Image (cartoon, rainbow, N blue to C red):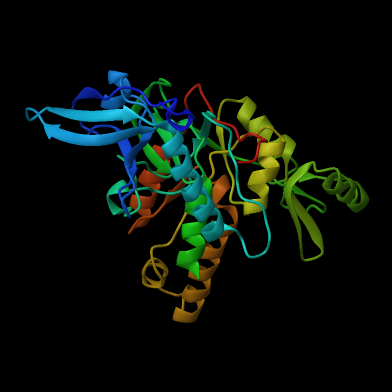
Length: 354
């Protein structure tokens, strides 16, 4: 046997039991007389559990057994497979190299992490899926058990209440999903917070209607020191929502209801007041006009466009996106999200960039 084939092993037969995810491995090759090789083995799948099939195995033949078994005749040929894989890698580099000269995302082998889904994913509608996919909804927590591939990650769904993990499948990587999106675009207790304001009117009571600040200079200083989640000016008066007022409500074991901008969500997270950020997204221009009869079509269009822009800009900070046909429907969905997210465990954003 020459040196080039020193790693070639004997031909062997591998018997696989079919599972709900198929046989649990991917193949490459078969064109222009090239061999067919095992390129990927799904963790927890039949091929993985069998333990006899390896990445780099050349498939020589496949014989049908019973309805539940398949006999695969293979031979381990790593050198040939590596040469084949190198050609694929070079081709991918040429096809996906950014024109701007930016660098490609690279993840370490077998990297594991937790992520919160920012979109719905239906694998049955993904034509490029190389293996059995894992369906998920916006807001689901996924345990990515292997992020070693640029295009596809292995993941399990995490049950929020128990922390248990269910299902195993392939999901698109962050890089792949963002590329597809760019191509396509071309019973709960509540309490309100008490805002801060500069000047008091005769009928307003300090601590009931607002917390009043002694001077404009003091409030401007507090804003600069990031003591306010949001602040603005109306009729020459400064108004704001302070971090302290929100924390006061939270310390009572209640939910503080806030109607804020996307930037305020980030400020709440910085203040370690991790919010349940629910984005109420209109279904269409027509649905906006149906809920607000006094709104013109032009006003409804602008409202809808603002909603789309806000989701694009701040979607990663949303806990959930809610849509409904009636105010009652929206209310019930919002209440359900808050109940689901009010458990003893919370997920907080990591500083690490993907």
